[in-house]
Length: 342
Image (cartoon, rainbow, N blue to C red; front, side):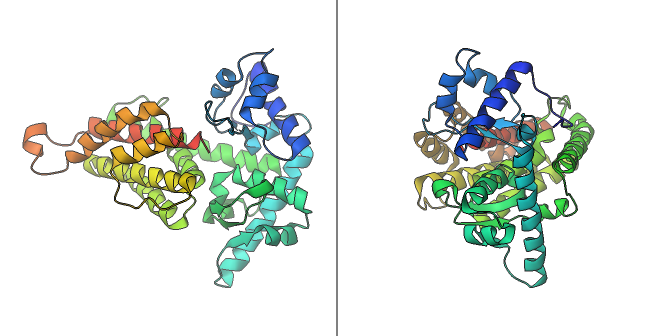
């Protein structure tokens, strides 16, 4: 199936096909380290995987042996023999969308269990497990989910964003919708980038929508996820209105929320909400869920947030667009680093 939007090289396509073929055989995403061995005669798996856009493929942390290589629906659509898998996804998506509509109309929560999804779709447990893995690969469709033993979700909450696909009946139309949304956000980036003197083709605001999707993937607690998503939306508005101080404050707040959510999920416990940013990053590094290099970013975020204190302004000057740009770029870097380990 031919997609619109992102393109890959011949070697990248071979890697995507390897991931997909393994997924077809096992019904679950393959371990990245296994693929590293299988792909060694064609090239370095990690190097090639890192060159593929995250919209298509994520390969996890190179230094975690349980990391999985996962394809998005866009990535799957690029592979030979993907038609049946795409039909499975679309049937699950349409079933979940209708369930969400009915739940809202009856003032009920839009939370599904694995057993409920089996009933809705008519899939057997194996096929439903595959559908769950496909749905969680499209984080904009889910607000949160818990559990994943043997390919099963214990429960997951549907996102209001799922309504965007209410009338979508084919994978081609689904991908066309994603491409249109990316084009829209690229236009937003082009409009706002000059405000902070960053070329639009490299400007991180282009990833506002990506960051929102990654946030839903990183934070499994619905309440905390909603709070961080609100921060990100406010950051976008603040950039548009040149409210540099707001960008600095909310970037730090969103970063703390992302780290809290990721650490809580991986440590299987509540670490509390009083931890400072530097402490959160240290805990995340110990858990191997964030690149150790981001520890250097905490100081920059803290310094930029400190600029909002009146007592510091005479010494450091007013909050400028440079500070806002740096703060948001640091938030994006930490978000991306966390996402790559999930």
